[in-house]
Image 1: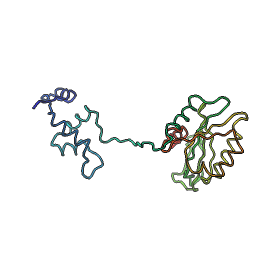
Image 2 (image 1 turned 120 degrees about the vertical axis):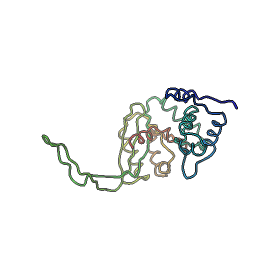
Image 3 (image 1 turned 180 degrees about the horizontal axis):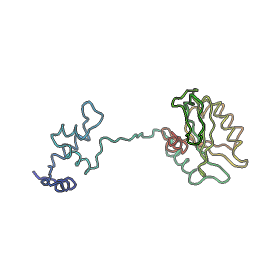
Image 4 (image 1 turned 90 degrees about the vertical axis):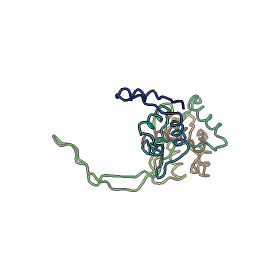
Length: 237
């Protein structure tokens, strides 16, 4: 049977004073097939040790095969195919606002972060003094939870936030009213936000009728990566 050399492994063996290390095509195929098509018993993914035990090869041989073929069983990423029928239109709408905002308008990304724990120190902080650093108690006390409503201004990166006890349409309209006061008159407001139920209630629709300069642009379902405010929340977390 023809034998295939793995350059990195061979070089390592020679550098260490050993004989030129070789593996056969069948060895490589056996490792690759198990890696891609089988799962180890009692574990979430293959390790070099478990694969070596399953194939009768050494751990270093398995590691070299994985490294050469760019296989990483210990790594995984989340992925979700969008099922929104308006996915393409909504992506184009949001991207178009980012790249070519309308004249005399402000483009804002809006999102809410609910259930934030309101924590405080159990004792007052002792201020810093000469030769004495500031001291804080190691334990905390909970004061309930809060919800943070925030928008990120795409052009400047400025964030406007407002904490609320609850996360309802009432609090959402209050936040919109706050934005209405913050944004200079004469500018339209384009909000990029997700399709959460709070954003579509009759109370919100009624408020929007009284503020025609506000325009809502919904991101596709399961596409939080398109909302820059959500990405800012991720960094904040």
